[in-house]
Image: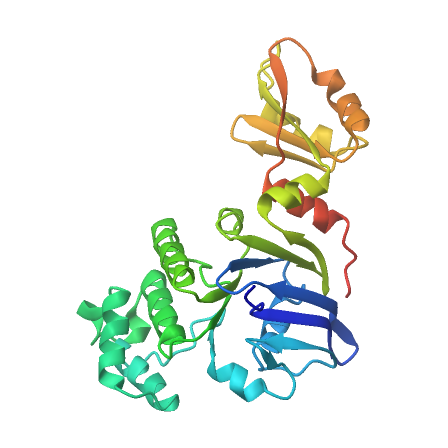
Length: 310
């Protein structure tokens, strides 16, 4: 079997009196796309920076790309591509100039050819002389990805790369990510978008510094033990199911009551309590059907059970 690309145990990191990452264990298989999810401030970025050698953990050990995360951090950085949350390239340089600069920093051979190939691969050739600062969000994203993969890394870390990008650009971005993974690249990507989480091979969920769930989307849904009912229709008074969310959210046993268009999803871990909560609304015109929980239902369930570390 191929050794995992990432295999770390007991990672901890504090900044002052704030314990940001707490005893995190995580293993990522080579060539997989792993989604890294969690609320803001949960420790995702700090964990990713420890994995690639940008931060040294206070305690913990392990390997990244077969290299020790403490003693071989410099070597890990050279074999890792890292795309930050915010666009971090030089906005007054052109697309091509930004890539040429990165090629020189890494001391790459055949720099002109590498830059031309990166431009062509991500559809940037016709814009090569355009200033980076004048690009839209989607084109900046493409440039950042080209820059992060220019040195042909073995591991790609993407920190909320599609925030503020339109749906078409997000779809194209993810198509490219899976193309890279099919070529053997290991990818870890943090995201808040549930549709993106479902496009990952597996998911790691961190909340307030602790890794609390790990597995595929199907596994996490099954492990949650959540029960979900969908309510639809209008009662005799013309009240739509989607208008019941405020009332149902207050009922014992209901963890989430969320409108979805003209319907409502009601979820909770206790079937009997959930049945009792919706019983008063089983009236003419309203229909209730048990459905499979969504991954969004699961993440809200996990957040409700997580203790804030502020």
